[in-house]
Image (tube, rainbow, N blue to C red; front, side, top):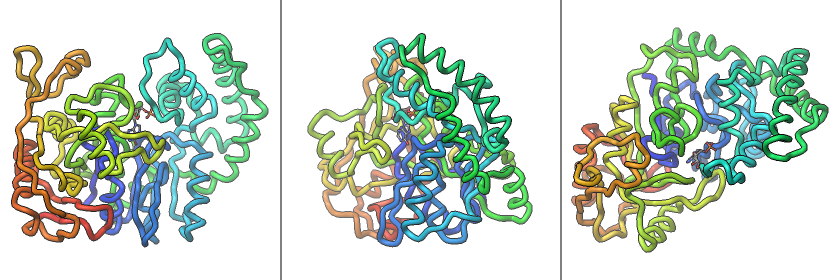
Length: 424
Ligand code: IMP
């Protein structure tokens, strides 16, 4: 069975742990969008790994990992990650495949991302400053440079000269920045080209061959549905399709190949960066849940904003991804709360909204309609079976499932692999 795994909130749902578990039963693990803005934390053989660009399946020996055409690749971040893995005895050679159509993050993308965030003229998005937005913008404007262009020396030189002169004009005129010297950028990337070449291939062909042989593919989504450029809280989103559709365009696999679409949620909600967040906690609960849940960004270290579970948000995710099952993460973080809320709808003026509004002004003015559930006030971290969860925790999960009209197939009660409950 092939599975697309997506975040069903604003990212950081705990996808890394589930990817790691499902990777054990998969042959290929494919990243299909985003870039080094992601941070998938996996506990493996008593060590903690944070992977930004390479699929988390790389930790499993023998698994093949693909960085698909929809990903934007920063070679500097890639080689750093490969070096970190090598230090832990994990080799990537012969197991890591990078799409020849994947676009490259260039130094001017990172620079422009930072300058835009610092500029008073642009509304601040709170990006990770990894160059993601500017790189995808160039891809759509047909100004991007792909892996296949990089490894063809002549073509790369020509293309870089053309694009960099335009970028330098923008840097000079708009950002009052001296620009980047061609020779420096070229030399650095020419060196990357030699090192990256052995990994670069036609990954659509590779995956088609794998599917012919009935190999199992796990599509590893990054970020989350509410950060999707089409279906998220635009403009406070990332610049790619983090939803299930992105798995297909971002890998070149057709929709008939995948039926299992697993959405990952936290038992509450978090968000990093700017943008509306209707169920956000006040200061006391914020501190309690942030500390208990260790809610600090895996990529930037920024403290995450925390709030109650929002069923309006996740129902939206169920719909736009076609989720057929859900994994609920970090249930144990709620162990200490005497009472727990779920937002079931929003009040906007006199109207009750049951679907997620696209208008950000409306969303900002929405007040969540909550229902209150008694907390279970006991430790769930050691629970191994669903029926051994406290009754009140079972009721909370059953209510989530009902509100989302989708079965919960996995519940996580801690960061270790064995703190996972598979629900029949
Ligand atoms: P960008 O992807 O760096 O352009 O950032 C755009 C928005 O997406 C910001 O609000 C980031 O905080 C958010 N974001 C990007 N990647 C992640 C992630 O992996 N987890 C959570 N938020 C993310």
